[in-house]
Image 1 (spheres, rainbow, N blue to C red):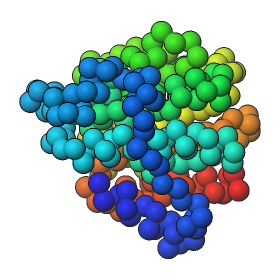
Image 2 (cartoon, helix red, strand yellow; image 1 turned 45 degrees about the vertical axis):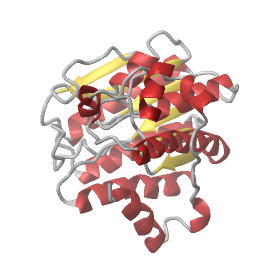
Image 3 (cartoon, rainbow, N blue to C red; image 1 turned 180 degrees about the vertical axis):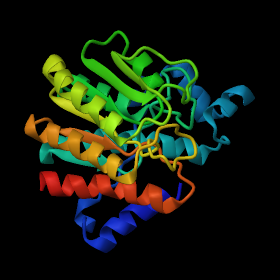
Length: 279
């Protein structure tokens, strides 16, 4: 999407970041991918073996270039987690591919970047207990399924009840919101829930999926947050992480408003808040 180019351009132009704040991920090695995804599925991706039905489920036309891109995004999130531990917060301009399962892709997600990064951090003893805070308008179904039997990763998804996917998986905590949920109701639910979760889970690393498809203007979402409400959401999560001395790795996730300015401003606000709160 064009937003991946426009967001850093805007942030550089306005001085929120400098070129020194940017990093470029690498293509993940196969061993790291196979820690989360099945060999059968990865081989299908690498060698063009997806069936027409499997390709339709992903939402993307298949190409080797697409697979290279999808194998790069998770390394961005892996590096992001390491930078978050160093600086308190780091943001991947892409990422949030939470619909990818271990053995299949769907919903514009082929490889699950947060799951891959979380597994890598745990395997390399960079983290002990992970909390996934998924505030995209769509449930993080792939992430929930991948970690359903792993007590080291607590998955929390707050999403639109009637939004895709039709079949929801069971996260460690799911909060399904009714259509047209506004700023006040959304923020009340979040502020009632997240501090309790932090106390309960006792994480030492947070992955935050900050999708802006919660906006009322979004073409695919069914919630009704304003741009200011979305900004308050991000501010609350980031401040709470800082107050609890929790490194937070942010993935931007979805955003499908017809006017690109709504998407751009909402995503850029996440960066602006991170700069204001942590630096």
